[in-house]
Image (cartoon, rainbow, N blue to C red):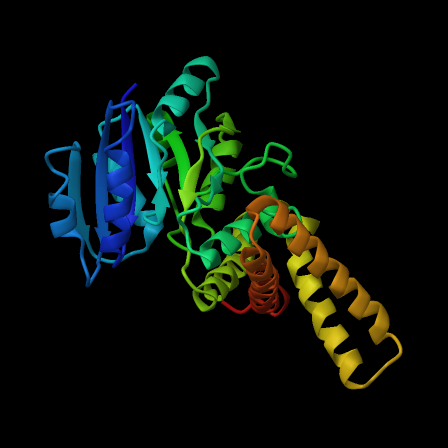
Length: 322
């Protein structure tokens, strides 16, 4: 099996350097790498050229259209039997391709996804964000989880599709705002088999500060409503949870401001949530600092997603503006 690894890139030369270094250590070597520079100002050409002698690598430059169409650009030029998409802020364990290859030989999948995690080399904030995005106490708990609710939808930070899927679907039809989930749903509806490969883990560095994390999750909340425009039936109750949580926090704050007797109940619930997140993160990460930061990350994740979700729910569904 020959893999084509496709990585869209936008102003991230240092990120791609770290990712490519991990690909040079893969134990399975039947693969090529396609870097799609999507209209970057700070391009990675010089970085990519340093790997020309140790990887089968191609570098393409195109006008900026977003990551979805950048991946399509790579699909159209790929030689592999199977196409793998990574985000540029991922690090790939050395046995990743062996794990995927062995799994696909014994369990046929037309498309797959894998989980993400953090290493001890990540900063405390990056590890706290990783915890938040994979915690059972936030919506992140359904990502890369065999016990997730409903159909499994691969995400583009760690996703693979067969050549047949590309040829039949035509790839991504939107380039941002939930493009990977829309693509996954469409693959399902065309009758292809999608599944999770639990051991196909990547280390996801994500955003390096809470401000960027807030912006990213606000975007994710808006993206869920964008997917609703294509597939109304895919909007589930679980997707409303961050919005309901955000409204609960706002109401609790107002109850404290007006000194209502009901504030006690709200404060107790908030305290319980904080303690659950803190001790669960402490058990997993074995760090008091990361446990404290995990509380911040989880609240940012839920409120940012909730605000983005409510914003576009109001604009695009309720009052139906473009």
